[in-house]
Amino acid sequence: MKSDLYLRDDMNPNEGRKARQRESNRFTMLTWNTDIFRSKLLAAIRGETPWSWFVPKMAGRDYVRQVLSTQKIDGEWKTRKGYPDDHMFDCEVMQLVLARYDNLIH
Image (cartoon, rainbow, N blue to C red; front, side, top):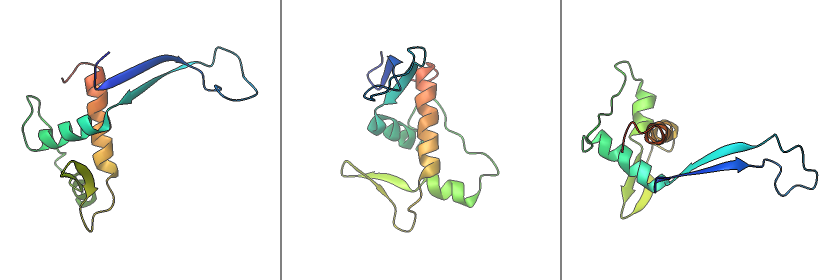
């Protein structure tokens, strides 16, 4: 699979438990490299990607504050002082993960 994504099929939700359930309860797990996708989002925000990143016209102040709250300083991810919440930043990153999984972006 892609080096920034890892897909693991046939996961057992009861693995490691004493009481194992039927084998039909399997699922697929998608994991990703957080550093790569956070960096991709910041690059998209700065307009440095071949694909565009858009902000809704009526984006609230909280949304904008949370999306812009995270930054990478000397290789370390930090939230800006006074802006501890970064939930919307993480949501935007997860949208990039799914777009990459579906080959919409590279």
